[in-house]
Amino acid sequence: MENLPRQISLFPLTGTILLPKGHLPLNIFEPRYKEMIEHSRRTTGIIGMIQPAAAGNPTITDQNDLYGTAERGRPLYNIGCAGQISTYEETPEGQYFVVLTGVKRFKIVKEVPMENSFREAVVDYTDYDDDGSGTLSDPTPSKEHFLKTFKNYITHLNLRVDFEVFRDIRDEELVNWAAMICPFGAAEKQLLIESVSIADRLCLMDKLITLSASGHNISAGENIH
View 1 (cartoon, one colour):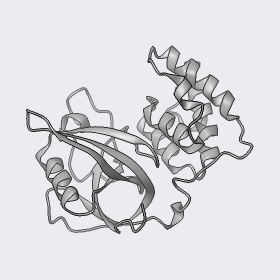
View 2 (view 1 turned 90 degrees about the vertical axis):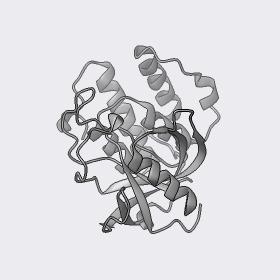
View 3 (view 1 turned 90 degrees about the horizontal axis):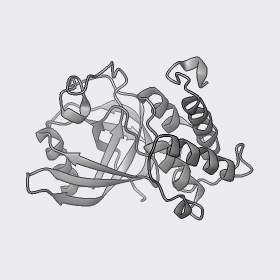
């Protein structure tokens, strides 16, 4: 998608990232984010997914983005990803089910004064012009090695995935999809979204999966840098 808007709505969500070519399903129930979806559908169709920088240690229902109990106005990481609303449905309960398709990463230039109930920012995409067209050129580890490692990890987690469908998809779609669904912590997710290239992200994913599967605490910075 060309000519992405410079000012976009922001959806802060701890532990959830969107990456180019990825598809992120969201169930929207908070009034402010329902307003955000309505605003986006009337205008650009773009939402900026981004993580709060100080997520803390939420309980199941307290200070939890998924339950709408997290503190408002928290500091945000500087890098997120713009997503296009590709699916929209309203449920019988009045909630919105949407799917965002990742387009391009961005850096926040500045947040703008709130005119609506949701946050907005002026963003810059120029560092991410290659998003959406990334390929692996002689990566370490190889795509086949990564698929084997990833399959073992998903099996370890007792998740059911049809891996045959991923053997023929583009490199960027495979790596980004895997990065989005793996249950890493917020800090590790942010490292993945900030990886410069697809090869860098693949190597980091391989390291994170190996450490996690071996029982190491991957939230410690010295283990993953």
